[in-house]
Amino acid sequence: MQALVLLTSAPVYTHSSTAGARVIYALIDPRDHTHRYLGQTPAPTKTSLTQAVLKKRPTAHAVASWLREVRDAGHTPVVQVIREQVPAADAPRVLREELTARLAAGAPLLNEQGAAKGRKLHQERLTAQRAADKVAAWAEMADALLARVGGPLPPGTPTALRLPDPIWTQITQLPDTDRHQLSFTQRWQTRHEVDHLEEPLTETVDALFDELNGLHSYGAKEPRRQLHSQACSLALRWRRTDRAHLEQMIGLVPWCMYAAAPWYRIAKAGRLVENADQFIQWLGNTPAAHSLKTLTGEGDQLDLMLQHPHAYARLRPETCLLATAAAHCGLDIPAPLHGEARGMLADLLAAPMLTQPMADLLLRLDPAALRALGSDVAPGTDQRLGLPPGTTAQVLTDLTAQPAFANDRSLRHAAWRAAGRAPTVAVPDYYGWSGPAVPTMRVVSATLVHAGALQPPPSLTTTEYVTRAQRLLAPNFDTHAARWFAERQSPVSAAGSQRSLPDR
Image 1 (cartoon, rainbow, N blue to C red):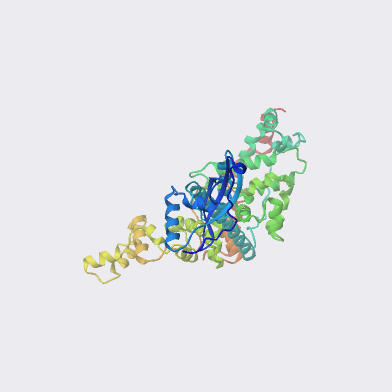
Image 2 (image 1 turned 60 degrees about the horizontal axis):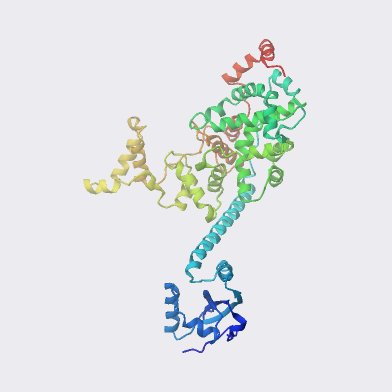
């Protein structure tokens, strides 16, 4: 048997010097010099510490098995003194401290009370590492997309929202105090200063962003409410004197929430920026950065608009930008973000709203993604009916082209599954869709068309397609709702509206 090697001396303690004291010790595996067990024992008075420790029979099964394994291999565990002269009352606490320190350092201790702590610490380290890897991945993709695409789609030319005269008149009479800096109690006590203006402002926003509000009509009222809230908060924050500047800022609210927000969120996910000012610096000399400078004096208000999540967790703005842009720019998505991109693309598979590059990316991330369309029934049908291979697949494809089966979703899925490829579209336009995520997804597609990474539909030029998306986020004075609103704001109606507004 190999001779015992002590990393520290193993003194023989005298009764007078160690009465009631404890020794904290470690058992070390001589084969790899790792700490495997930490324990405490009364300071021995007649034998050496090594003899006293090795005579003990460990109660923990894992420790007993390890001791047998070491001895069967012809070795003896090494005993190391960790702490001496520890008062008996303090020994459990000191042992826990030593266990925690070594477990945090990665020591493979076998203590039963330490194993659970070790697993917890190990899981915490893994979780922290995954989070750090994800942040680094977002940062990598944010910088790559900015370099390739050039940042958010710039706003269109007509972006100012014209305020009705009665509303503007009352805004010029507001107190010269920033309502954002007031406490909740103070805002409640002074609500009469702005409450009577919120309803007509909301009507203005609804009328001039009629199409955008229409996209929110299905399944979510929150995005529309947030649009109203941001516009009203901006307009009624304090007394304004520059009408044109205020109208320009309100007109940019939807653009901030749907065109700039995905870029702000992806940069913030990578911790490249912390606020709107840093975001503008990150964008550099781009049209979007110049537009955002119009709102830089609004501080936290601009941050709130740029953080807009559109209330649909499965298709977050930054994920939509990540998956769509990476597919068309030929960028490799880092592994920590594979799940984000895969989930977003899978949601669009059966719609269908994947382009060929997006479908290729989905199948690279998940080779079995087509299973979401159902089972492939074609090979079995061919075999049962004695048909040449591929016959059923051809029949299914032909049936989907017949008007009688145009709305048969199950048939379409079966045909796509039999073809062994994902259904694709030329441009992920999301035309005809409604819901909180649709404006963001439409704008992301237009951003890629604007950057030349995606071709517009055959019936439209690049300028026409981009302009259509820009108009979605700009006040539209040509809709029926806008004309109705303009009639209400005619000189006669405006005078009536002025009289109807409560006196301050």
